[in-house]
Image (cartoon, rainbow, N blue to C red; front, side, top):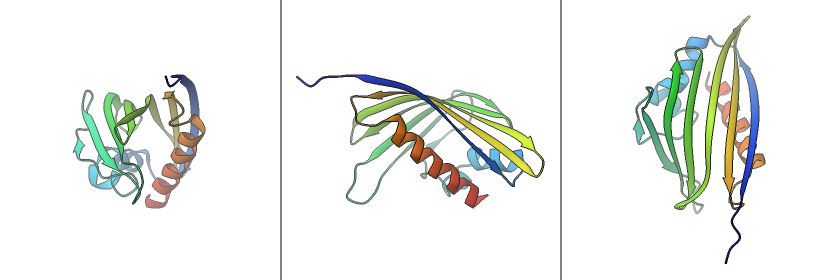
Length: 143
């Protein structure tokens, strides 16, 4: 029998962009804008209780399934969502994520906090944090 375990972790990634909170928020709230720095969603219902769903991955690699439920949205200020991540049909994590947008001189500071349960060694907080940093750097390039 395979040993099952859960690793719990929280990480925070902060980025400051030379863009207004409205523009940064729109990069999350508009499916066309979001698909420029994140995967293109198959479902995108950006509202409290709404769902976002996407599937994809590298060529010859696993297919990742990202399934979100939006828990709170305060336009231009805060987005909170819960999500599951599967790899080739195996659940690898469940997380709650908070995205805070704080106006600063010349732009916006984004604070991304993820609290996750990572299952059976299929994914780790360190790998997820690294991927999140790359994703937020790509967002900065798009902005």
